[in-house]
Amino acid sequence: MKEVPAAEAMIKLFELLDEVEQGTTIAITRDGKVVAHIAPYGLDQARMARQAIQGIRELQKHTKPVTADELIAWKSEGRE
Image 1 (cartoon, rainbow, N blue to C red):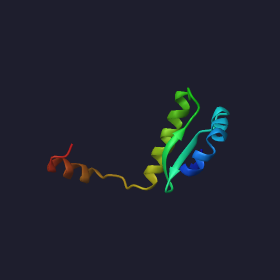
Image 2: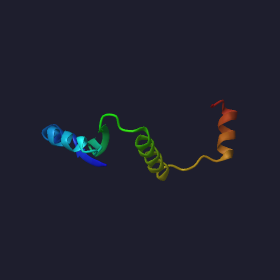
Image 3: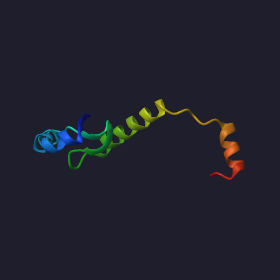
Image 4: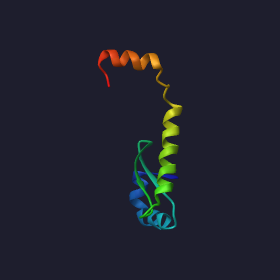
C-alpha cells in the first residue's frame, strides 16, 4: 500500500486517482499517521479481509497479550 501525506495528496489528486483505477490502494497520512484510504471502487471482500488481518497483525506486534489471570481480575472488578 502506498502512503502519501495529505498535503501532497491534495496537489496530486488526479494522479493518485489514476493509480487507484489501476488497483492501487493509497493511504493518506497526516503527521505520519494514516487518516484515510483511497481504494478502487468495489474492492473485493477477500482483499479487504486480507488487509484487515494484516492490520490486526501489525497491532499485535505492539501490544502484549492478556493473561487468564488478568481476565479473571478484570471480571471481579466488574469489567466485561
